[in-house]
Image 1 (cartoon, rainbow, N blue to C red):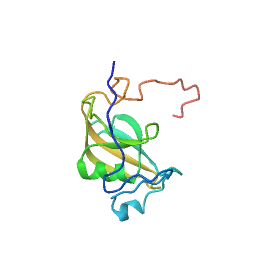
Image 2: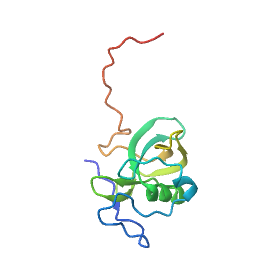
Image 3: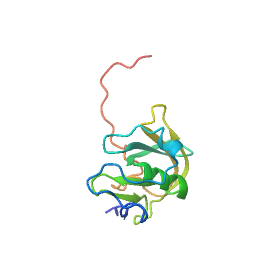
Image 4: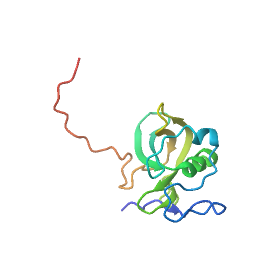
Length: 142
């Protein structure tokens, strides 16, 4: 059975998380933060791919602080909506994501995180979270 990744509890010690607030304090560069278009709960989608093959591995959520930690540590850090805390991919499972690059999309509402994935990216133990193919019945344009 796969081991879930351990959370990195709470916000940075110098920036406690506000009670009931959707925006958590962050050390993200204001120039980057100003380009983000967040969901009402302060998040942007993070699409994660293998840096050398382009294989899409997973999707997770980042707030400003998770993006800051990702950019400054080289380790993929996300915000868990269910646990309401930060988590570093691979902290307990050993399935680490070493960040090679991060790109912001044209609308500022998603980031593309290119990583060197060690082990499975999905909590189910699969290499990718996108392993279930759905039937496409529409006509394919040629």
